[in-house]
Picture 1 (tube, rainbow, N blue to C red):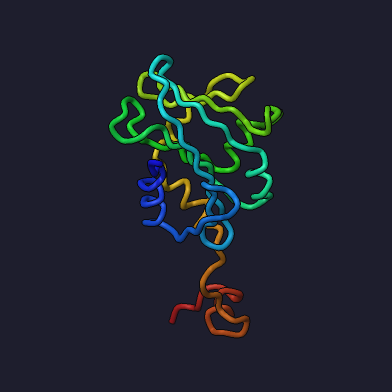
Picture 2: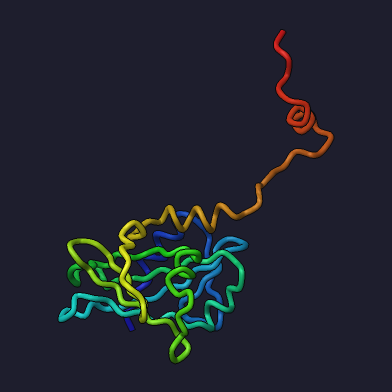
Length: 172
């Protein structure tokens, strides 16, 4: 079976630590408090689109945690999508699927390539241009890495915390 996710995981690992999250084949924990869910689709050449199913059960496992859904559009060299990925933050996915039932336990997403743009259409909704999320790994890192607690905070009675409470030091 070909590994459709190795290039994507390589990109992610440049930015943060990830580990596989059982029981799902393509779910990962990122850092301490974020999740990633990867989906792959080959290009339907007749309609110039990619078709994805996102299981409701997987999203429910993430609960209120920060997560990103990564839609991998084909493999490098297969045509128009050329292995590009849409990195969708949880808020974007929630807006796309809000009020739409998960048929057969999953949401159905079609990604159309029109004039170089990635238009995402959820069954029952108009298409929306999400090209800004194409290979936008900064979106992923801002949500997953940015939610981690700071590595260090000054103690309440340290000079740096006291200075912060009392304002800037007086000039001589």
